[in-house]
Amino acid sequence: MASYETFRVRPDGGVLSVTFDAPPINLTGPEFVRDLVTLLAELARPDASRVVVFDSADPDFFLPHVDLTRVAEYTAEAGKGGGPGDASLGMVFHRLSRTPAVTIAKVRGRARGAGSEFLLACDMRFASRENAVLGQPEVGIGAPPGAGALQHLTRLLGRGRALEAVVTAADFDADLAERYGWINRAVPDAELDAFVAALAARISGFPRDALIAAKATVNDISLPSVPAVRADAALFQQLVRGETAQQRIAELFEQGLQIRGDTELRLGDALSRLKRAD
Image (tube, rainbow, N blue to C red; front, side):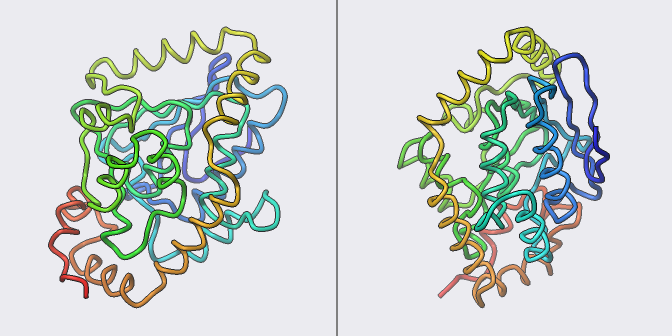
């Protein structure tokens, strides 16, 4: 296996465990995107693991959001390993959805923005009932989500609930996320590891060709088109660089954004306290 800077990998038979470990809070930055692009190339090999389980070494933060100081840098990394027009986090996540392996996210802590969109790109999502928080804060900052949330949440939640999740920019606990269809199941924290391990082991014992064929067919029915993914990414990148978003981002940084503390732990609440936008 390749070496990685922002996560640890551990193969076990047909299951590969990938643990995010990028202190202080697992932000999605250029190093993470570079590692993910490398991992996707590894998973495309014929001898790759049949199942991948993603989790976090930090119980408070799964993937909280992108590093808002390094948007241009992680976008440049996202273009590596793809084709023309693929320089976006949304297209990297789209390739994650298309990877032959069955991907399972095991969620503890905050998964907001690009972190939530990473989850949505995975095939299955199981979250700690006591210690998982999901959210799409982008509209509260000043831009629509740009890496898959608009596409996936509308398909999974339906129009009304998708709009609730996106335009309120609020935090959702695991029970509500399960009820809405954002995740497969909310599982008691004490049972989560064993539950996901058993599920991954069961799937990894099945014929690889059957797994690949089943996933490919479901993908063809359910995934957004490449032009739709690119359009969402372009709009996000345009608006997040605009004056309104930059003012609101600066205000959040003054309150402690991207530092372990109350602002990151309760970002949904912090967004509601920003100055009213014109």
